[in-house]
Image (cartoon, rainbow, N blue to C red; front, side, top):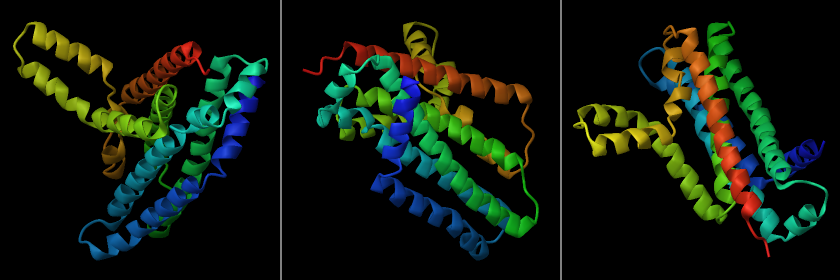
Length: 254
């Protein structure tokens, strides 16, 4: 009940944030723009709309998760409302988990709205609902779940600006870390290779959630790949949240 109360309160706060509506506006523009971009380019127009539309949902979802997520805990500390909350019969982990679920609920609502616009545009061209697009959107949401956990983790011990920069760096590294596997294979066996292997395991691989190319070009994807990606996102988010709870539990607000 306590977690739900914090989550719903966080959701209400998030939907009143002006930055949120600005990002939603640009996201909608980006998705709608894909239709006009398709008219100006040579090639399969539907594929262009799919590609740009999914990229817009992913990009603006990421910005919402980072820009709002990094301020969730800091605002409570900055406004001193954290003292009132901590005086109530609520554990710190419940407060943090409620914040996470509240922002996740906000992202879910936004993703659904953007997806409806996107699917409507696709339906206007194909006159069919392409359900495989929902797979790509589902894993975009799963990636945003990881990013939300990251944003909350950083917000536990630093300012929103630094938290945003760290979260953005996490996002970029997460989409580039796949290249480390090639580097590891080319590195001679030894301490250097071992350290690179450890770093590769620790760093996120957000490409696990990227099924845009496969969905746009109707490429087959084995079911076990979906399962692996889902479990990876679930456990990585859990790991980040536990880490955030440990830091938040030990923090002195005086």
